[in-house]
Image 1 (cartoon, helix red, strand yellow):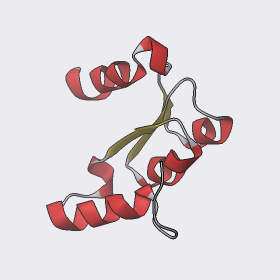
Image 2: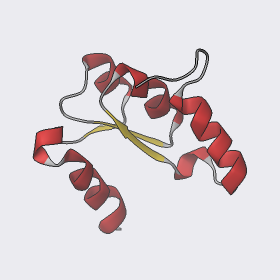
Image 3: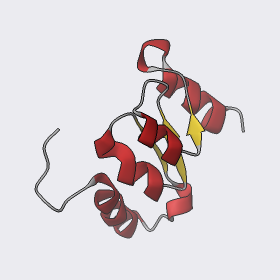
Image 4: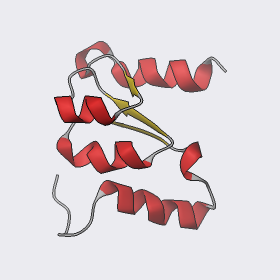
Length: 83
């Protein structure tokens, strides 16, 4: 993924929050790469994939299954569907 210098996913989420009027606590961010780290730290619930790099896992509130094991579906089911 390529983004302009000085732009990251957390900054983009901040813009989205302003546009929607949502709070950080309402955001779930799921990622596996270093470029997802700021987004995972920023979100109210940061989720790392099971195959994520170790710093991403350490920053996350929850670690789901890997990409090959449908980790995004598992996390969405756990945090959105079973409430």
